[in-house]
Every structure is written in C-alpha cells, then in structure tokens.
Image (cartoon, rainbow, N blue to C red):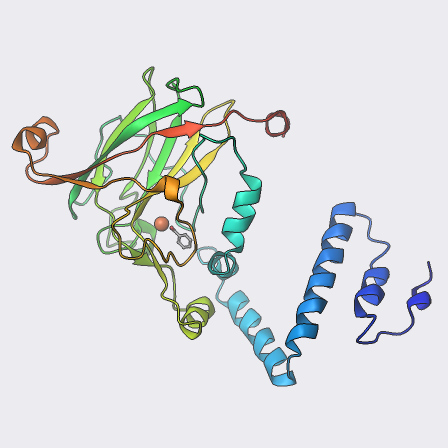
Length: 299
Ligand code: BEZ
Ligand code: FE
C-alpha cells in the first residue's frame, strides 16, 4: 500500500499515517508494539491537547530522568514503579495457579554474589536494630516441602537504608543472605525488624511524586528471591501489616497475601530458646512455588 493513500499528516489521520510509515518493520513484535503505542499515544495527545510549554516540560522531565541514570540509579524503572507499570507488567508476567505465592517488585537494591549462609545465621552484621526471627517453609502446591530451594533475602536497616546506599557506613552484605532448604523445606534466620523507607526521591520522580501530593515511602518488608529447578522463580516480599504506609506503598507492591504478622515476643523462655538476650520479633511465612511451565523450561 502506498504511503500516499493516507494523504499528508493531519490531526484526524495521524495514527494511520504514522502506522503506515512503519509498515516495513521486520520484527513482527516491534511492529505490533509500535502500532499500539502510536494509537494510544496519539489518543492521549488528542485528549490532553498539550500547549507548546507543556510539551517542552514533558521533554525536559524525560531528559532529566535519563540524565540522573547511571550504573546504580535507574530513574526510568522508578518512574515505571510509581506509575504502577512495573507491578502491572509483573502481574501479567507472573500469572500463577491459585495457592502459589504471588510476586511483587524486585526493586533496585538486589545484589548478586551474596555469601551463602548456614541456616539460622544472623544476616545483621552490625548489631543495630531490633532483633527478629524470620522462618517458615518452602512448599509445592500440594503442600510437600521442597528441598534445595535457594532463598536470597535482603532488607533495609532500621534507618531505612540498604547496605549499598550506605557504603562505608554499613558493612558490605549487611542484612543480606543466601540459604538453601534441607529435606524439611524449612528456612530460618535472624535479622532485624525492618522499617518503612523512601524510594530514592531526590530526582525527577521524587519531584513528580511531590507534585502529585504523594509520599515516597514503602512499608516495612523483607525481600525474597526464591529459585529451584523445575519451579517458577519467585520474586516477592513479606510485609508488616501494621506499618503506617501499608495502604499507600509508593510503588503499589503490597498484596494482601504477602502480609505476615510481625509478633513481639517477650516470653523469657522463647527469648532463651532462640538465643536472643531480650525481646525480639518473630515472623513466620510459608512460600508456595508453582511448577515451571513447558515454555519457561524451554527458555
Ligand atoms: C525496594 O523495595 O527495594 C524498592 C522497590 C521499588 C523502588 C525502590 C525500592
Ligand atoms: Fe525494599
């Protein structure tokens, strides 16, 4: 079809003209994506009717978002997070049978090559914060315990910072650990009671949140990345339901099923049994892994 059949670009035929111009796109997925994006974007512009000033403002926002990105800071992912796009994409990518633990955002603070620890170890390396016992079981959908599951956990400290945000202040790999389950599928480790914290808000995304009348905080949580051959990778958190931001997570990561009770334990017998010196917190949460689909195994 000749480009000219659509005539020259007008406000009315804008989608057809642009989409037709892209007709020779080789990659069918790119072609499909560009068609949808063109249609939706033009629809938005037609509804918004931006002034020249507003259009320039949008360009400057995107420019600043790019300029603040580096190897450690990904402002575009943060933008996707606060728009709910990260959680929406994840929901689509991780549809699971009912009963399987749900996914949530990975976030920017996961690091590789975290030292493997013996089950029961304390991931807090600087003795700061209120002690906590974190435990539970990894199971399949039928309730059988899963042996050999790799559990990668990480959390912020009691001031709301990850170790990588405070290099030289916190020890390297503070509040991180990798564990493997045995025959009984159980896991347990010592940590500290996490606290809410703000996502990085000193850039354009933080500025946008402010203009939208939103706070930048995430409710207290532990991050988990659980893997086992034959099962779908589980990227998730457990959340403290009593946190003041539990209903307004800046990145929409909270799911009802991921809330766990953070119990305060002051029974001296329990304090002694678990090797604490005083009051501690306890959270128990079982994770259920779904088997990989054929598609994932082949990939
Ligand atoms: C986090 O939980 O570590 C996180 C998630 C999304 C954006 C920023 C931080
Ligand atoms: Fe986090």
